[in-house]
Length: 195
Image 1 (cartoon, one colour):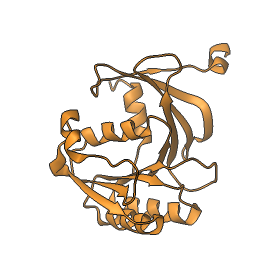
Image 2: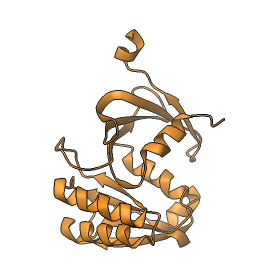
Image 3: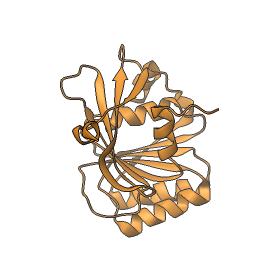
Image 4: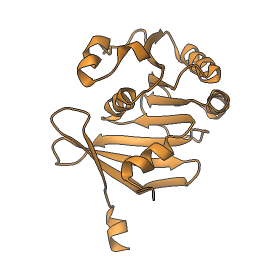
């Protein structure tokens, strides 16, 4: 019998399609996905970013650089075109795009259709957040857990399968020794504790 863990729940929610992330810990969460990659991945960064991701530092995190293709984009339009074409091709397991604004309804529909065709995923690390409706499969907020060293709060804000569920599905991620050790335990809201 298959044991359902918090990590399995999160992995199932990160199905084929476009997923949006924001918060203090969103970049680190994306790096953890990168460390688990079995196939080719594209990492998109803005060309004029204030903070660049230094690829060779990722080796210390156990990331295989031979599986990662780093691409710099000039603007949102160019980034969305690269994401869509790469998703459609089926040549990559997923794409991580850093520093984008939230795609609108039409753009997110196009990304999901391309991902379905190529059987791949897009993880979009948003530059700020909007509650605008779009077709993203999921939307996540990932921040430091209040008053807890090396612990991060993962909050599922929206799921196309489950609807708007803000505050109902949360997990605490425990990072030990600055490595990618993950102990995911459910975090209950006050409302759930009363139920």
